[in-house]
Image: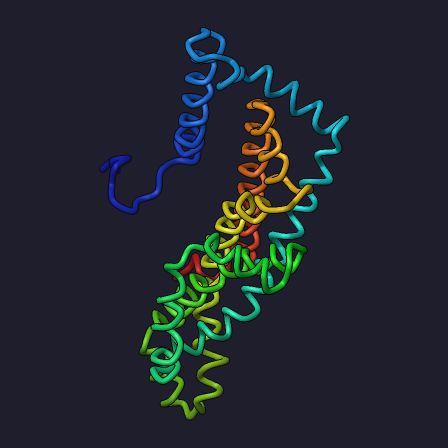
Length: 263
C-alpha cells in the first residue's frame, strides 16, 4: 500500500523534500521581484534584488564588509562558547539530581524571561562598552535557556538505562558519566544548535550601542542614511551565517551520533 505524503512522522522522498525546501524561497523571491520591479513599493523602502546584489558586491569590495562579518562571528562564538561551557554541566546536574533541579531550575527559569537587551545599560555601567559587554549580552541571551534545555535532555534519558546500570553495580558517578551523559548528548547537541541560532538573532542588539564594527553596526548606520539595500544585505548575511551554522551542527551531529539513527 502506497504511503501518503501526509502520514504522521513518515519519511518522504529526497526529491520531494528538496522541492518543498525550495518552494518558500522561490515564493519569497517572486513576491520581492513583483513588489520592487513592478514599482508597487518605493525603492527607498524596498530595493530590487539587483540593487541589493550590487550593494552587496560594493560592500565586500570597497567597504571591507568581510571584516564586519568576522567581528560579528567572533563575538557570537565567544558568547556561545562561554554559555555552553557553563550551561552544560549545570543543566546535566539539574536534569539528573532533584537537589540541583530545585536549586538551579527555578532561578534560571525566572531570569530567562528577562530580555537580554534590558541588561545593556547595567552592563555598560559595570564593564564598559568593549568586547566584554557584547559577549555578556550574548551570554545572557543563550545561557539561561540552554541550561533548561540541557536539563530537559538529561531528564529525558530512559529510566531503564539508569536502573540497568545500578543493577550491574555501577556507582552514581559511573551512571552519570557513562549512562546519562552519553544518552543525553544528542539532545544536548540539538539544544546547542538551536541556541547558536539565538546568538545570531541577538547580534544586532549586541552591536546596537557604541559600536562601529560588526554586521549590526553596518545595519544601524545604513538605517541612518536610508540605505535600505545595505540593511537587506546585512540581514541576509546574518541569515546565511545562521544557515551555515545550523547546517554545520546538523552534519557534525549526524557524524557524532550516527548510532541514534538505529534506535
